[in-house]
Amino acid sequence: MSPEEDRVPVPERSPEERTNDFDEVPLGYSPEQAMEEAERCLECAKSPCVGGCPVEIDIPNFVKSIADGNFKEALEIIKETNVIPAITGRVCPQEEQCEEVCVMGNVGDAINIGKLERFVADYARKNDLEEAPEIEESKDFEVAIVGSGPSGITCAALLAQNGYQVTMFEALHEAGGVLKYGIPEFRLPNEVIDHELEYLDELDVDIRLNRIVGQNIELDELEEDFDAIYVATGAGSPRFLGLEGEDLKGVYSANEFLTRINLMKAYKFPEYDTPITDMEKVGIIGAGNVAMDAARCALRMGADSHILYRRTTEWSPARDEEIEHAKQEGVTFDTLCNPKRIIGDEDGWVDGIELFECELEEEDDSGRPSPKILEDTEHKKDFDTVVIAIGQEPNKVFYENAPGVEVKDWGGIIIDEGTRMTTKEGVFAGGDAVSGAATVILAMGDGRKAAQNIMGYLEGS
Ligand code: FAD
Ligand code: SF4
Ligand code: SF4
Image (cartoon, rainbow, N blue to C red):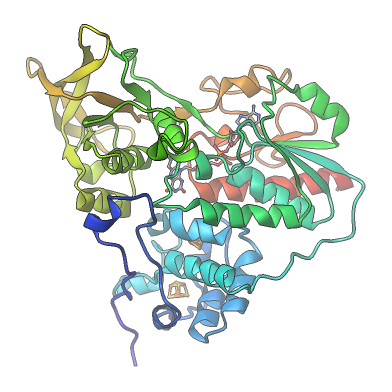
């Protein structure tokens, strides 16, 4: 019998219900639904899906274990290469990775690999199926990890499993990197991140919060105390457009806006002491995942939320699922427009944005049609809050205070692709700090490779 062409749909909360809170939108599969979806897998001999996953999870085997109802075994298979499956199952751009090359996609829907991965991790967490991690005999090497995002977490876990003594330094008052301060709870609940971080606790990783390397602790000091260092400081510094009016009250970078709302819980003000401006109409400049997160947060804060984008939605770099969810919830997409300046009122608060109209021309270097500004089309749209979401780059605090660690002109740390070492002996780097803003799973892949190279370096192989 040939497998069902269509995926088993994942239940979701209705847009009317979910825009009133920050609770998670997709509810996830039940065991029966997960088994039914897993049964669609063809168990292909060459299984291209594995090559589509940056950490090469043994997808056919974990999916088969689900189809057999053996969820514990499925988890063990996934955890061989992925220490945070509840997170990747939720936020990986699967449609461009493992699912893009799934053979079932040629005849119908690709297997819903991400949602199956999420199901296994959630089921194991709720049913206490996780075993305490096995730790190899203790080794006499100490490694420092700078940054507690997915790249740092992955590197730390692999080293600690192998018996190395690991200490993690994190600038913020909570660990997790973008997973905690950037991605909103309706996509990735904190409870899920905290549970995955407990795994580091079980591995005896020492996590030191509120430690900014390059500011209140120097790289030299780490070099004295540790045998190797992995730098995974991410790309948390926002880019701005250089527009007139960007310094007005009511203009936020997406990073600040999301950090206030997610990490500092501004949506629970005054229970949490984090103020954010009263928002009635918010204009978000940009159309990537970060912009979608900001737009959906603004909506949940009670505002009329508008994405302002110079191309059309089909060229947006955000995941299809995020665009779909934003549209369902009532975010307005104002496309083919480019900001000229942000307009303020007499008290220095945002009053609106002056925009040009655009049209699309031939493809540019990004492979997308380039937007052409149409002269004499300036018009004002009223907004009381503006969020700039046009990208991030590595933060200077680390690399400007790390003598010997060289960076590219845009701030990306330079590493040797083979050894993953920076231009400074014993200092390795990876994740967004090296690649620029990328994805959780690529940052994890870097953390994995770095851990392997650090072990080789310390063992002298
Ligand atoms: P980060 O997650 O940025 O972590 C770096 C950590 O280092 C931070 O905690 C930071 O505080 C700390 N740090 C920085 N400097 C120092 C210092 N000097 N000393 C000590 N600590 C320091 N990717 C996806 O795959 N799917 C998504 O849906 C998705 N959505 C996103 C939404 C938003 C709003 C953002 C901003 C990004 C999103 N991404 C998404 C991208 C993804 O989150 C990143 O690619 C990934 O988190 C990078 O991991 P990292 O470990 O390299 O860095
Ligand atoms: Fe797919 Fe991401 Fe899971 Fe790999 S980690 S199998 S790319 S969802
Ligand atoms: Fe299953 Fe798709 Fe992988 Fe084939 S390519 S093994 S159908 S998940």
